[in-house]
Length: 210
Figure 1: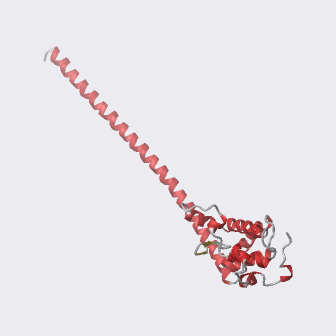
Figure 2 (figure 1 turned 60 degrees about the vertical axis):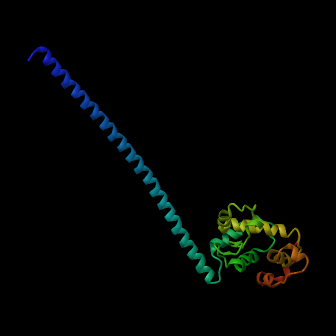
């Protein structure tokens, strides 16, 4: 073997080693990228699992809470949590009705069940979205869900009662307007069946002091 042939063989071997090393580097880089992608996917899945667990826990808590509301309703009682939310909204209002009357109003409307939907009426006080919210036909589901929140429903109900007391002088007429609407109440096209259900106890305080 001549010197030239030997050097040629050495160069070929070195070139082959370089090619193999380059392939190994590329493969190693691919493995690193795959590992990084896999790690990122695991992280995303971990976050999704945590979110799902939180959602399930929220749903479970909601079911337990709604079950408690339903048991109280079936017993003809307002659940303490519902009573507290109504009371908090009532305290911040003009107190158009007494607290007992306000709680009874919610009982007559929904039996104190915040998820009740009856036609266009939603929630604890059976409010209509377009009557107490800025009407948004593009987001009806969102508005219905908002009114299913008993705290928000109570707050909006108190605001509606506060608006009615500016127009009508007695609780009976306020409750007629609540049920039948202001126009029909002004023209006397109503009956007192609904207000009688709410004002079942002390009628001596029927007149509202403005």
